[in-house]
Structure formats: structure tokens, C-alpha cells
Amino acid sequence: QVQLVESGGGSVQSGGSLRLSCAASTLPYSRYFMGWFRQTPGKERDGVAAIFPGSGSTHYVDSVKGRFTISHDSAKNILHLQMISLKPEDTGMYYCAAANYGGSWYEFFDLGRANYWGQGTQVTVSS
Image (cartoon, rainbow, N blue to C red):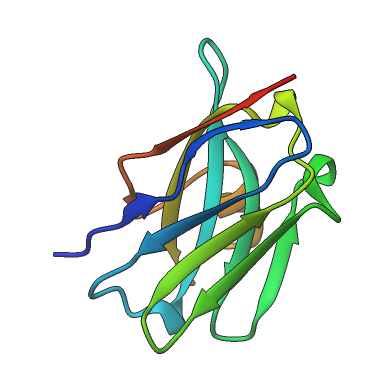
């Protein structure tokens, strides 16, 4: 049974930093896209950053480029999202997700089709 368990959310002021982590237990990461999605009340869950650990390829939504860095610790099978220069619009529930490589970047990142989802961790950025 694959489980994705997020941690590291919290409340910070604008300009602050946070690091999210997602422990991926038994996920065979080399065959999966992994990523972070963000959802705010009344809105769709949108892709923020994603990585294919098998190659190291990454993908970011434009609004976080240069501020967020996604990485995967293969030894521990933990996905990280380092967030700096946080803005109030970064506020939301952040979900870790994983999708089988049989899909595509578009299906995973843009359509949010994933095989597994974590329970979410809240990030609140105040101005």
C-alpha cells in the first residue's frame, strides 16, 4: 500500500521560507512522476512543481519559477519542495501526488491525474 505523507507546512510572513516534505514509503519512484499541487477554497487544485526522479526532469508553474525548488531524495524516497520569497498568493493546501510514468507531464501536471495523493499540508503566507 503506497502512502504519501506530507509535512512542513505552516504560517509565515511574506518573504519567508518553508520546506515541504513528502515521504513516499513503498512507491517505486523511478517509474513515477511526483509533484506538488496547491488548492485554495473554491478553486481547482493546480500543479505547482513536479519531477520525474528517473531522469531528474522538473516542471514548474510560471508563478513559482525562481522561488520554488522541487527535489527528490532517492536514498530516503522523500520529495521536497523548498519555497523561498513566499507571497500571500502562495497560500493554500499543498498536496503531494504521484502518477505512473505511463501517463504524461500534461496529464499529471496540467490535468492533475495521479495514482496517489497525500492528505495535504497547509501553507499560509501573511502580508
